[in-house]
Image 1 (cartoon, rainbow, N blue to C red):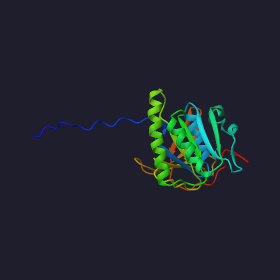
Image 2: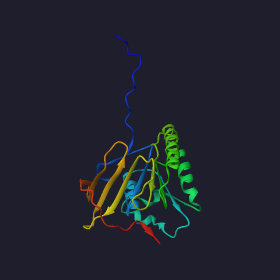
Image 3: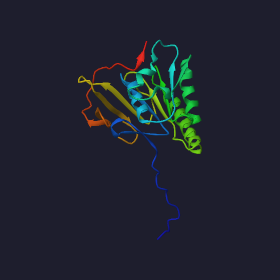
Image 4: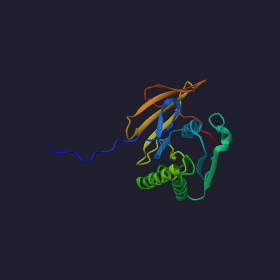
Length: 213
């Protein structure tokens, strides 16, 4: 009987970033938030995280993030706002921020979903940032792409959508993920935090986002 000389090492548990209701995102990767309340979902992640947050937005649009609108979710003072002048700079700034590993959360508010090649570059930058963060005893960076409509960024680790329900709550949908099936939840806020209840994947109505014009 042949002797097995080499064995595949066991897969190490990857660090995760909590989402409301006990859900989670894999850190060291790039995820996509879409839907009418995508910025609200990003704010919820802020509330579940610690450390600085780099939020990148297009400077040519009249719509701007209003930091005080985040107070119900997280401390606005954690935000580092970056406004860029050209569309190609949005992903470049995100890539450099992820590669540095200096901030545990990097958010890019995009006018359109990016293609596969830019997303691959972001994943590589995140891996480099995770190594830099490890040497500094920090969490691996997490990248969030905020895209309009139903999203559609290619190559992301997962895609999530958040919208308001007719009853005034929140409907969270995991549209795709590498290792998980599509699913939907109704988010309910309680004194001890968010509660996620399984819900049918219905199409909820639009919701206002955390912006000011």
